[in-house]
Length: 256
Image (cartoon, rainbow, N blue to C red; front, side):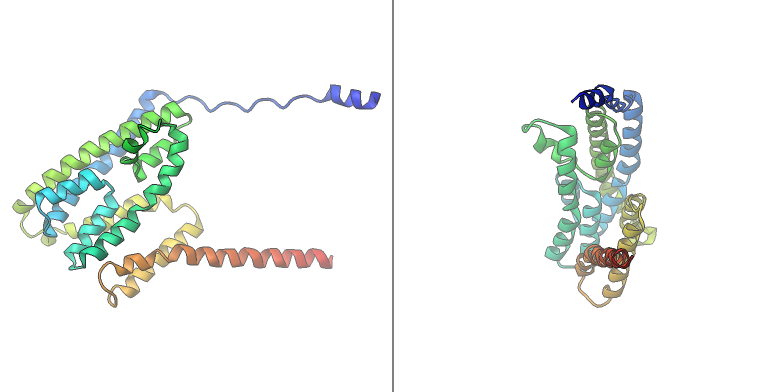
């Protein structure tokens, strides 16, 4: 009994984990404005591309106001410009934008908004606002980064969309300006920094191969849908490799 008392008395509680250092509001605002302005200017390319695809000024602006998912908007007008079926084009854009729902699940816990605010905040849940928000050390900074990024990007994206669609007529043939490459260029610029592991890079490479192989054979928009199979395919192969490695390790331990 005395030994147990002695052991308990010598135990020391673990020191508390150091709190994440607070980030100045000016630094959060600077980062948020940088992202919002840099990406928001791409709305000009979308406006021109959309007008070149045959959409009216009202339709183009409505897409940016109501949809507000850049890559999905580019995918939609790109498929329409290539002569694709509107339903297929819309389905491809929908599945591409569905990733924002998963972002929302993560941001809901980080931001902690009330139920009355969440529907309004959900409209700004996109790649850029998610990246800025998750980079913050605390809830206050996360809310500030989310708000500044969302507000800047939404305002600038819609403004440049309007200017681009309005000025598309003055540019003449948009294909001659090479603006048809704006959609994949912007999307790749957003995607590339997110491919940090070998597994992610392999999945992205396989998706590109699927699109390139099926593009001449299938209707417009379908290759994009099929490219989504790259992720589960890579995960299946990775899972089999891990199981095989565990089995070899277990067999070696049994023999030893």
